[in-house]
Image (tube, rainbow, N blue to C red; front, top):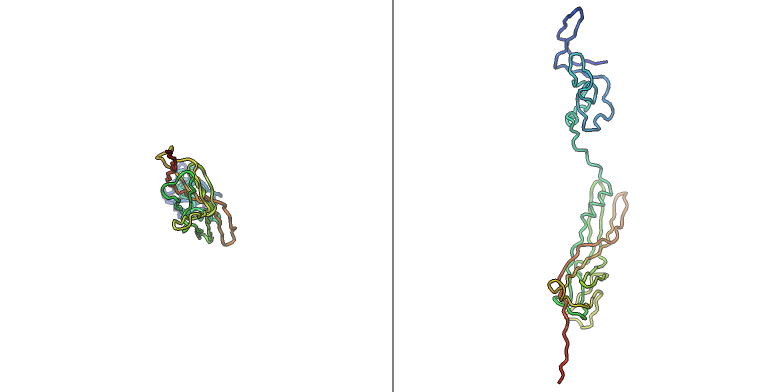
Length: 252
């Protein structure tokens, strides 16, 4: 059954003994049954046609052309009515999303390489290795979003030294060499070169120091804390020439 709204009968003509109702071109007709379920689930949803949610399907009311709007399946939504569903709303932010964002924002600074001897060392000589002790401290990052607060902590643990001829791992930053200290100073991180850098590019070893950080986080409210284990930071790079001490004897 069709429910006519604002529809005026403007003319009645008699042709061959039959009465014909003429509808004005601008008239609109509403269909009583509701739009089908999920009629706006795809980008093909348009307002039009002789069935809700269909465009130009079937026959319209007497005097109308296929495609006449018989009921707006989009309830007046202009984006749906043009077939443009627009950008879907973003998904709700979860605690896991906030954790990922905190991880991405955690800072693990590049630590400056220090050696002694500083500018040149020698085969057979114990070389002290360390990174800036002032940087050896936890880095804390806090991210609050969607009602969740995540606090991430990166704690430096060890340094992986690539020394050109060998790779070693030292716990802690290493011990700075004190030029005014005794000759028998000790360090938690040293290396004795066995070969000079004469055959290396530029006559120098390229050395690097990469700090491994232990990363943990807390999450509130009603979300779990976590431990991400060891995460490598950026690797600092320096050039270090290694020479040989020439010894000889003279007779006579």
